[in-house]
Image (cartoon, rainbow, N blue to C red; front, top):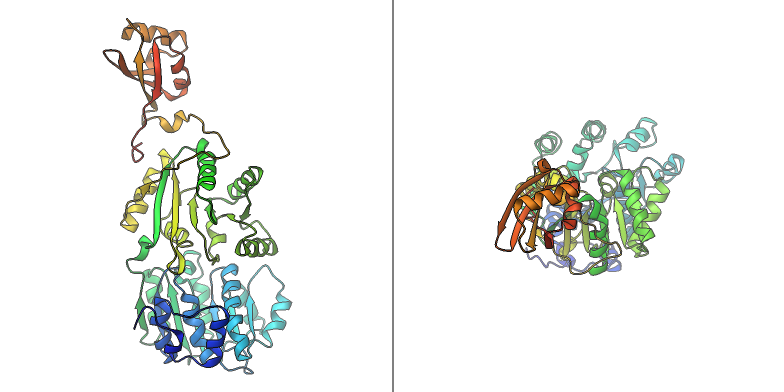
Length: 460
């Protein structure tokens, strides 16, 4: 089937087509083109496709083609995070209203009584495992008669420890239902889940080799901790856009966003210590463009489905390769171009190597033409080699010998054992000095035009 298939060619009814017209969807993406026809035929479907491929509508469209109102909950989509549950329900609602149906998102951190009231009229549910189980055990959510069960971002469910909950939920649903499973990767546990609960599923593998995140230009910047903010500021000022910036901890997510705000950037944090209402408000403002820089942790970003993110920045390099792929997949969505830039310190080169091996691709070195709102410092810790020595190149004043240089260094508090090899040829030379005393080297009387020797960004 053509990659530019029109939705009219997929045997979709008039109500659904009207909904798609309202949201300016005219042509199906690859995953929609591949998944919708077998799903419309009632087949179980396993789809391997990365975030941003249009997968949400590839299961929503078949659901609303067949779902009937007035008979309780007929379809449920399980998601790993509350943000993703909200996003799926929002898109479902846009289609449901054209069919006269009601939808609801159920997740923790929000009023359970309000969700119970909405469930009474809902035909479609998007929810997270904890709240779904809670409502099922209370007798408020009955899944015994559902026609559709969708597991979205199954590998994220696995990473977050939700598979036992998913098994319990699915074992308490009707046996006669259509199951659709979506995952960016296919770990063995996910495959076993599919084998146990799905009947001869139709497999669609669109991201087998897509961990390299095609369509995303991937770079790294070698930078020490003391200059990260300066390099980030230079990037933001040089390449304006819509930024999603990742930090590895909730604490630094908050700190970094506050530092950016003080510098005059429209930046806001997104992390688990924020209330649900604050997170929802921040996400809505990011989508509307009122915020153009979102600083987030991995967990909080798992539900982010925002168009037109131009840059993903790993302010902190992820410790796990799969997290890298998940992070950068938030840009370059639905065929649009995107950039992913990862900051790497000398101590983190091993993580860069693991990522490159995992995606089978070398990241390019990123050069930033311009300066930002923070002055760069000379970071001798980052400029030192694995032995803690900083290499300098210099021109020499007339008549200076190695002995005289070492003697003069002692005057400036640099002991002989803190000096590495000294090489002199004609009137130029090289010297290594321990990083804790490197700031004193420019004061040496016999040196002219002293500068730190830059090293290969891939070497410690």
